[in-house]
Image 1: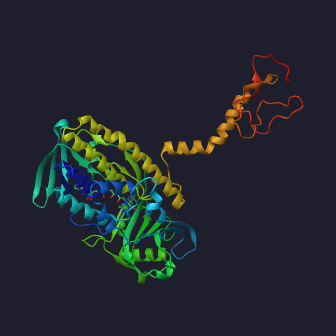
Image 2: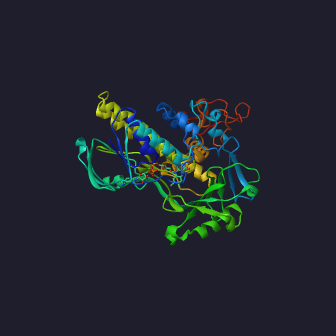
Image 3: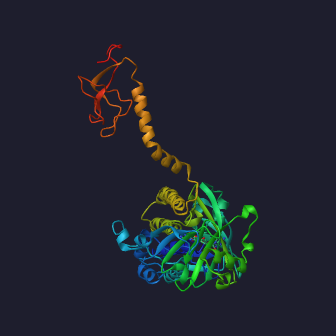
Length: 462
Ligand SMILES: Cc1cc2nc3c(=O)[nH]c(=O)nc-3n(C[C@H](O)[C@H](O)[C@H](O)COP(=O)(O)OP(=O)(O)OC[C@H]3O[C@@H](n4cnc5c(N)ncnc54)[C@H](O)[C@@H]3O)c2cc1C
């Protein structure tokens, strides 16, 4: 089994496959760990999967100490400004918040820590992890597997595999080579991310900031605590279409931008490298899209290669890890002869709807938290519009029904009422005062009320 990409989903796939005894090789072009935490938490379902793999105790012991029951999500113009909105982050991270749906709670583990744990665990289980090597290209022989050309420090090697798992991230070269397209709103913006140290005690005013959404230096700015020791992560929207590039984010400019967000002096901000080569700023495309297919013959897409969603809701890494689990046990069952190859078709059938639904949730949360007019997929827009228009639709239906009554139609009790029981009697209701009694103000009679009696002769009403 060949896995391209040693991020959280590729490494999880290696763990889930290796624990079933499936020989697995992971090819990852990075040589060193990322200094940026990226995903800050995994959700209860993902913790359940790691519990099953024996990793839960290590994950819990590596959990970030910066999130606790008092952590708050804050929206404001800048960190010291009056808050426009404050939400407790305690619930999603506490056992009580998810007790009804899972035996596990959210685990606030930073992605870089999680990747280290997964690497160690995969190695212990016998996975062959090749960091500092990259996939150049591959040939797909359908049922006969895949030939891949891998380049590392020693040169280029051919690797033959029965199946290839593409966990190579949102710009997946494997997906592109297969010509698999996307659905979804697509690019929502670009974010320049950097890490800095600063003493923000005064600006925090005793608050335990979990996530800050600010309008300064630009609307859409996001501030996160890094490790609780005065280190912070800042994401600032930038606009490549307007000629901006990551090169514009020099350490000096980053210090000025961070100062505006947190209400400090640029001199009090120190920008910290995120990669071993001294890189300080990393670009992050905020996108929402899901691949049209998750399988092409012996190649499967998982993680960001299959779906990308905005970070709101912290779904990205968890959704990918759940893909990895779904696929791994199926591959193991087929290889062991416990299931036919048709089982592998259920991967796409099961995970594609999950990916689409989760992306929608991330978009809805982005809308709610930032107040941005975030585009929604057409079917979500349709569902929301239908929900908003439901009362009007009901009224229209009432009118249509009532419209069937023509002036002079005879009415009689016991026909179909155009209103719904318990709702105010629609103006279009066909009920009339009878025997000196007013018609009811609400539709109490349900389906049996008075309505046009088409069989009766026209011209008189009782
Ligand atoms: C700045 C930032 C902040 C984020 N914040 C959050 C968050 O708060 N919550 C959340 O859930 N998610 C967040 N995400 C998204 C989350 O990090 C991703 O969902 C997650 O990393 C997906 O994991 P992955 O393994 O599928 O892909 P990746 O982590 O992108 O890993 C893909 C790997 O494939 C390797 N690769 C690519 N091509 C090749 C090749 N040809 N050969 C060898 N290796 C290759 C890459 O080097 C990379 O390591 C954030 C992402 C970024 C960048």
